Length: 306
Picture 1 (tube, rainbow, N blue to C red):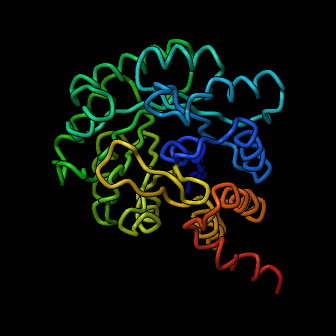
Picture 2 (cartoon, rainbow, N blue to C red):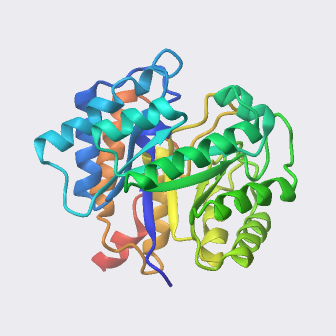
Picture 3 (cartoon, rainbow, N blue to C red):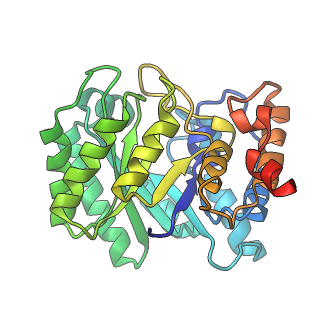
């Protein structure tokens, strides 16, 4: 089995829907907690209009803090989400390692999210990805609403695969499927990733599931069975797209890590340190977070203590 990677998106997807704006200093503290826990692939923010998503207004400063302070560990990858050329320029200027960009397979969601149709957004994203690659930056492209849309319902398989084909034709081999509306279920996950691997067995695959209907972790296991190696999750299970019909949290990072460690995977991650940061998240927002391991404790640690 190829090495499994957690791509922590809590500082971006987890926070973007929160009305209580998090100070830069608190984001830095949470980021340092994630790094101390051994999470070395982290999405720090998105380069979007701060009027639409105020929580992301300091994304540039967050990247710059670590590039200037020298506090970034060797081997750590800091990613940023970009939606347009201006966002790409901002990301290039402040030290983004991995540019994440994508298009929604749902035309309705695409227009609400970016103001463009799926076809228009696809052309724009491919051009941006090629520009980032020319600048010798790592990229990951995604297909949002890949498993269904809160506005349009089921998305035809052909529409998703046509976007995949365009990515592959452009020389892009790092593709994430995002379950923006949380409609995915395990057999569907296995079938869709299987179709992509039939097209290109060397493609690097990522998954991004929301827990809207309670199947997030089950879908991660379905993706794992098909050969997906990058799992996007959020500390505390926070998150949700502000532009989808029913917004719900991401797969919870500490729950995902705990479940994988029960199989002997991801043992480089210190689960207790991850839980410490998740607890601080809950204290800041003054509410109970949806993560199960925060409430029940770790069976992994219990077994090791016996």
